[in-house]
Structures are given as structure tokens and as C-alpha cells.
Image 1: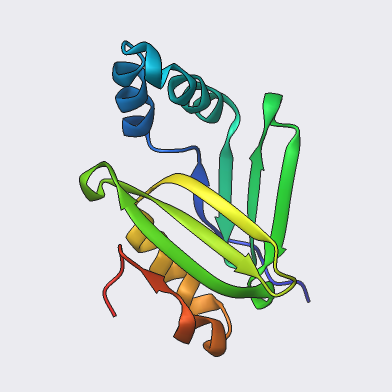
Image 2: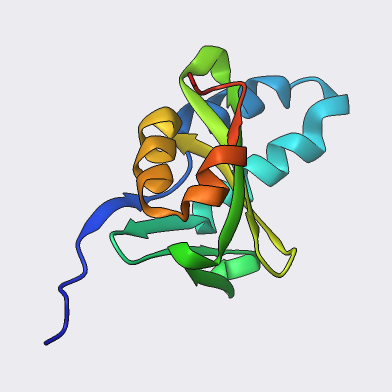
Length: 132
């Protein structure tokens, strides 16, 4: 019997990151950051379920990373936008890192993911945006 996959979060980065970077884009120095935020807003999508995490991004949304919770070795979070959104870096057991940039409700998402990862990974995970 297959276990039904339930979606916890599905969507893109927080809109505040795009707005902030567009405002910063009026200074020519921050223009590359603005272009990056626009590309992320258009093509970056996260899907977090009770079984796996999928990240679709890159130019035109052509890159896709997908992994199950047992592959996670560590999660680190950093709040952005006065804590309204945050960045997460998920390190897998093979050493590769997956970035979840401008994740809305990142503290809730971190808590959800932390419940599902192995206990060893949970003990070494954390970051500036979590309360231990």
C-alpha cells in the first residue's frame, strides 16, 4: 500500500525579497541582485511534502533537485527581511548543498523539516532563525 504524499508547502520565494531587490536596483551597483531576484521570482519553486523536498529553479526552471528526508545531514537557516523570510541551506549526506532562498515562513518550514530528518541531523542543525 502506497502512502499518500501530502504537500506542506508549494510555491516560490517570498515576494518581499523581489520588492526589496527592485528598490535596490535603482542604485546601479545592486542591479545584478535585482536581476537575480527577478529570475528567482519567475522560475524558482519549492515543494515540501511529507516524503521529500523538491526545488525547481535555474534559467526557465530547467534545474530540479529532489531528495528524501533520510538523505539530510544538516540544515542551517538565516533570517532575512527582518525575519519575514529566510534562507535555508540543506546539506545532504553526500556533501552536496541545496539552497532554499527567500523561503516564506522559514521558521515553520524548518520545524516541519526538522521533525522528518534523522535525529543525528536534527541535533547538529539550527541557525540564526531558530530557537533551540
